[in-house]
Image 1 (cartoon, rainbow, N blue to C red):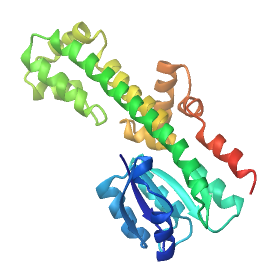
Image 2 (cartoon, helix red, strand yellow; image 1 turned 135 degrees about the horizontal axis):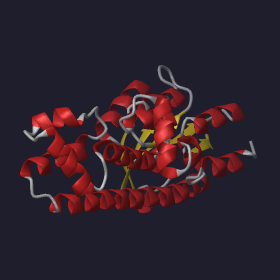
Image 3 (cartoon, rainbow, N blue to C red; image 1 turned 90 degrees about the horizontal axis):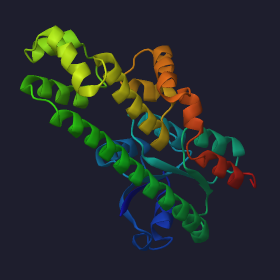
Length: 267
C-alpha cells in the first residue's frame, strides 16, 4: 500500500481528509497527520511517505515552503496541495515547485477519488521505472565484475559503483586498493570498455536521467545529486551522452503539470 501523510493547521480539516472515504480500499495507508508544518517535515524526513496532502497556507512553513525544503533533501515524495484559497497564482506556484495536483476545500470525495486514480497510475509507473533502472544497473555491474580476475580491482570497481556521485580520482583509488596506477588504468579500459572518467560520467549521467524522469527535482538539484559540482560541465556532458540538455530532457518526461494546468483552467 502507498503511505500517506496529512498536514493542515486546522484539526477539522485533518478529520475531514481522514474520514472522506476508506483510504485502505484505494490502496493508501494513513501513516500520520499533523497540524504543525515543521513537524510534518520531520515526519517526512524520517518516514519517507509516498504521498503528502498539505494545506498551502499554514503558520511556520507554508505548503509550498514544505515542498521546497523536502526537495532540497533530494526526496521524491509526491505532494497534493489542499487549500481554501482558489487563487490561480497559488496553484501555479505549487505546480512549479513540483506539486502533483491541487484541490480545494471543502474536499469532495469524487474529486479526491479522481486525484488518487491519477496518482496511483503515476506511482505504479514510478515504481516500475525504478525497478527497471536498478535491474539494468545491477546487470551491467555484474557483467563487468564477473569478467574481473584481479581481486583488488574488483573491490575498486565495486567501490566506484557505490560512490560514483562523490569526488573520485583514479590515482587515489589505485593507491587505496594497492594497484599500480598504469595497470589499473589499463584494467579499467579492458574490463569496462571505457576510461575511468568515461565510466564515472556514464554512471552519473544514468543517475541524472533517472532522477529527471522520476522525480520533481530541478536540473540544478539533479546536477549536485549526480555528483557534478559544475553546472555548465554537467550540461555539456549530459548533452554529449543523450543528445539533449538536461532541461530539454526533463520536459520530455510525463507532463503531469500540463494535465494539472488543464484541470485548473476552470478556477
